[in-house]
Image (cartoon, rainbow, N blue to C red; front, side):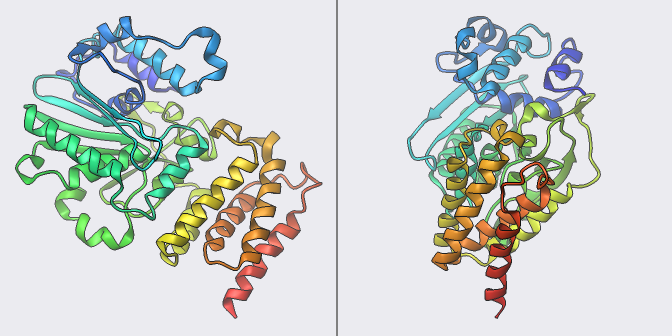
Length: 381
């Protein structure tokens, strides 16, 4: 199965003039946006790749694996004819303790006619998923306003046309920046890529989802997408295949390339559909305050389970995860608040999607399911 690395190698000698900006190029630029390009303004990727301060080999085990992979991708890109002359014309980063304020973006000048604005998203940590969830109960967030200000500045001070893109929360920032950009420059934005990023609150759909906006937005999501199906989105939807499973499919490096695009899947998985259906229904019934409480409760499940990144969600940790779910469901059930509903929905989704009862006989699965079902029966009375 091929990945972004294979795409970069296979098309290393193909110029952007010969083959325009593709789906896979979009993911490459969005992944590069996770790196710190401070001090490299107006430098080519060839120069940056040669002079970048890479992660020391001795620190790889203590560093986000995808950061190391992104550095390796940069090294490869700098040696290709396709990417070596791409210029990093702008880099901006505002790294605040408040995740709602954190913002970073880069402009990649591909040719004289076209540039790609890549908005950094959330990484593969569990905390980052909590940040994505914040979009469900706050609008607009500071990062959205910062991205819009940045985009308007770029459009005013740079010539040519633009493609906007981002991964995870970055995809949301790309869409927001496009939708609210100043009318006199908006026509120069030719395409917007939302790579498995969350959408917008349902009540904003009539305002944001105009025919013009939907025409230019492309949503790319893997089969088991969860984050990419949060809230409402408009535009073209593409479902793709991944070499991973479950939430790990959110990782761009697991997306399977097919020539210069991603390999298509026919439908979302049953897991993705179930979570989307039940989660969306629950979100519609919760107030912003309840959504905030629910997001916090879900984050507590992850923290109490010892989960730091998506890679930690594996068979060896299921015992800790389900035990934490058990305690959280009990707590929410006793508290009697509406926020507990979303916790129960996600908990039941996890339990129903994993056939591991025989592997973990010490976990009281029946009791967990009873707690969830009893809570539903009380609501139906």
